Amino acid sequence: MAIEKSLWREQNNTAVVGDSKESTQIIERDGSKIDSFVQQNSPVNNEMIRNATMNDLYTTDIDGQMQMIPTVVREKHGKAEPVISYVSFSYDDTVDLEILNKKGRFNITAYDRRVYNAVSTLFINGRKTVSLTEIFCVMTGYTRTNPAKSQMEAIERSLEKLKSIKVYIDLTDEVKHKVIEDKQPLIDAGILKDHSDKIKKAVIEDNMLHFRKGEIVSEKGKVFKSIQIVGEPTLLTYNRAKKTLLTIPMEYIGLEGQNATDKTIAFQDYLLMRIFGFKNKKMRENKVLYDTLYRDSGQEKPEDSKGFIRDRETVTKMMGEWKEKGLITGYEEVKEGRSYVGIIFYTEEPEKIEEKKA
Image (cartoon, rainbow, N blue to C red; front, side, top):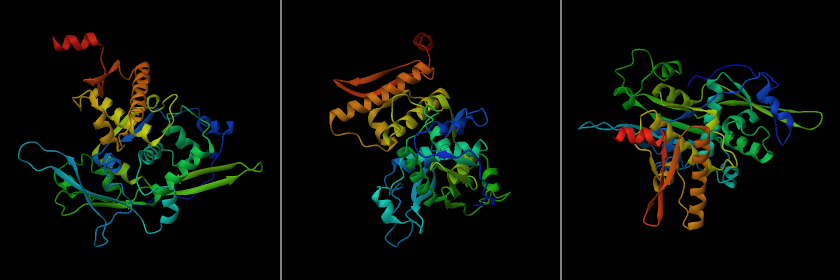
């Protein structure tokens, strides 16, 4: 993909590593915040954390070639075959696998995907040079402006991982079956050419993210870090072409009283996708089974009942906060016998639902 050739510029929107009131200056520098979070919602983005083979970054075929995972991007009805793309995520040759393995970083996680979406949100809003604090603020919905040192380090590690991951998408079938709704982003990126309807092959092959790092140490010893995003993030280009971007008001991204763990983020992303899909009439079902939540968010269901109860409490806290903020009008857990098996959310008042049934 084409890489933007722009020079590094030192800017004041840099991040303080550690707790400091100075970091709040990042989001106040122009008096505005980003209003909406852009969540990339293609099957590829969803499969990359729930498909164990796809998100294994060091898996290869027996012959040493990248392992391509078939991904259904649209299920056709009737006798027609499903539209499939072949996808691979793997580390590039420059990665120090020994260092990465110490942190268990052989897999793409929900946290990594949230960082990627935050960077993409900043990029699509014209922010090309961004601080680590800005990324933190966007990925947590601006609920916190003073990240701890450990939180900044987690973002930095994730950025380095994303920069080191090569993505390969054979989207030939998508182009042939006109699943790509807007070819222009792919044309601008040099992946397709104008008048390329009769193609034999169309492939995206690039690292997930390109950026330059900046670091300044003040006289008082504070460390300021920022990145300059070099070129549009690869999967953002792909999702713009497919028109699979989900725009979520920032107030629903932030969660009060809950830490941004991998599981919390995975649950939140999946539930927001289901709620907005239902509100936009792209999904018919407003009931989410817990087994489905675990499977599609890429999380393992706890073997012990206490762990499962904690996860249910996490989900109901989210639903309660979204109800208070007006995203949903209510929710209730679903039981089968004596066991809780899922949760139902409502986007209309009960009397309106009853009117429709009548």
